[in-house]
Image 1 (cartoon, rainbow, N blue to C red):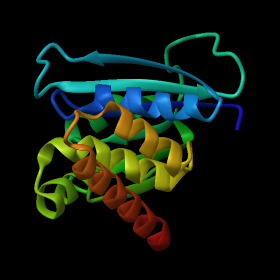
Image 2 (tube, helix red, strand yellow):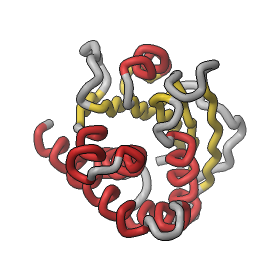
Image 3 (tube, rainbow, N blue to C red):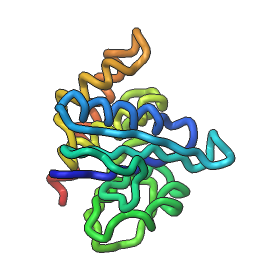
Length: 180
């Protein structure tokens, strides 16, 4: 690995900003360089939002994602808006509610939102489930570094709930790898 450009997308309120911060922090724990930025559509909550992370073993000379290596989309709107920026040989990780077009990219459709709501019982851990799935599918950072970053960033008193969400994310990612 020399450099990965990652875009985490969903709707405002799904925690993509925090996800980007956590992913960048996990990379830093491993001695890599990382930078994170974000933007929201004009609607804020409910509109398409994205958090971009660049992880590199070398210096990062430009702070914005130019050609996305990995795209995570939790909503149809975010997939429609941000998928044109995914490299032809990139990795696409989608919530299984999102309809997609077949392409040359590696595509993983996983039950991120369903897992958060129906398995864990809390919609607000959707972003942590998503991070767990992303790391299982890409190994962009180690699971240990991600867990450390999650536990460092989540609100006090929610550590066990978020750890459960992370491990459920790891599992659905591993299950998707077995299917592909």
